[in-house]
Image (tube, rainbow, N blue to C red; front, top):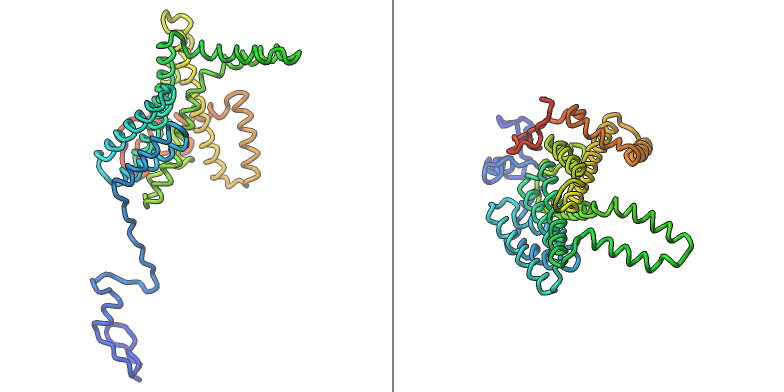
Length: 366
């Protein structure tokens, strides 16, 4: 057998085997002229589900919201991603209409206005998260706005419902507390002192319950949306990473306005309770978000120093203790807005496209 190679550099065909030049070209370049790598696996293109499947999931989630709010929020966000992924804004409008009609209709049939308020709040948060995740446009500022608007919807809805019945949310909470106090105050000697302490704690914390509920709706909806986005083959770079969380500067201004409203609430001539509850909810939300940003800075620092898991765990336990006592993590997050410890390229999306809003503008120009 002649061992010489031809001009193509391909070894000669062994004797007894016929091999044409067309076979060689098809092996190297495929039948359509594309390069073929031997042993490489073909990746099948992700088939996009039809529109009706996404709308069906959204409708099911809106219906479930009237009974199991958190499960419904997850289904709505999942269905919103399926409906709007790589599609036009028209599909988002379809999704919004289905959510409002089904959630409102189910709550109306149940005949409970409280259910309607919670369903609309959870469904609105979940739908917004799902649509923005599907379009790769979920930024920190938009997430803050979604939770904030959801909180106001819950607070305003329950307050309007109470006013329509000649009462208020604050008065209803006091009535519920007095009911339980009269039921258990005589059960033990120390029960009166315990309820006196609980009264002070309740008056301090209960107005922030609307913010906590909105945050829970947001977290559940975000999980459902991310699962759907990844299952559809969405690019990971469009999903925000915790270590890159960057709070916009206007959020600090919002906290200052809320602090001023809280201080001036006793002097407000009308609707003092509404002003007080709104200001407290905003202040608690501002502190929580800044604390999360401070934690993101800590995670970035630990990753940069390549700290061991045990060291990281103890440091975060200590940081959580300081946050409860003096708000250390929130302070770090606040300073990071100006200092930019992580050297984040502000004003740009994860794919290096400039943002259309001003949420990443800060006092420091990178």
